[in-house]
Figure 1: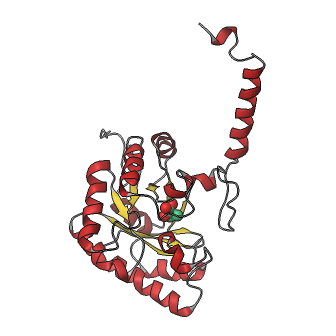
Figure 2: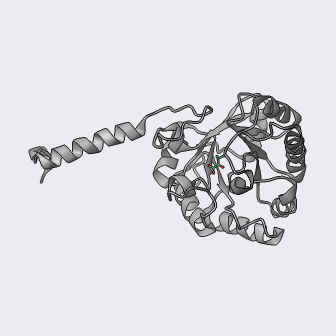
Figure 3: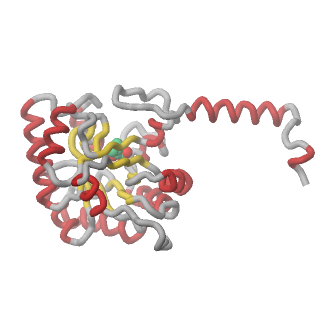
Amino acid sequence: MSVNKEIKRITTNTLQKMKANGEKVSMITAYDFSFARIFDAAGIDVILVGDSASNVMAGHETTLPITLDQMIYHASSVIRGVSRSLVVVDLPFGYYQSNSKEALASAIRIMKETGAHAVKVEGGQEILESVNRIVAAGIPVMGHLGLTPQSIYKFGTYTVRAKEEAEANKLRADAKLLEQAGCFGMVLEKIPAQLAKEVSESLHVPTIGIGAGKYCDGQVLVMHDMLGINTEFKPRFLRQYLNLHEQVTGAVKQYITDVKRNDFPNEQEQY
Ligand code: KIV
């Protein structure tokens, strides 16, 4: 990664200032060099190398199977395409839950082997010791509360979380604990908008919502969903900005036709 002095990089401090100034944070997932380069040049604030790579890149049903080595491969590809955005990498399932030393070792591998700027972990009070240890080592940590996909088998469903008061209270408390532990921000996934508003207003660090309404300090979407590469996934919270599935299908069908007709390559397209 070369440092370009002309470009003002987004840092975790930038995000704190954005919240203080009421400027919303834009975040999107990416898993490879080419898309990361497009998103960075388009001006996205934060690129998340999400463990959703397990779903959208590898075709698994859940995020659980992806390994730390696979996350490192995706993150180092992303980093090579980025000159401005803050790059956050998910710690995958099974590499931080056992104990805080293992969590720190995983976070160090991500920082050392990818050049990324921060890690993200799912959960609150249960993983607090790990968050403390990673933060103490100087590694910025982003939290993730609400519908945490690594716990899908505990929830049993991808429905909205924290609708009941007990779960909402735990989320409120977890958000405070994560902030006190030094998290520079947190994702709030699929929770009621009013709860996300309350939590966002109670914190100094920014909240980044996905299916958590308009009062979060920023928003994140999975690139395959917002670009319409996945067309089967249509939750209410998703705004689809493109229908890449349709456009790519059309382009490839045209290419097949051109090849079959011996229309491609033409005279100008050969040596
Ligand atoms: O892995 C991921 O893409 C995420 C987002 C849904 C926030 O964690």
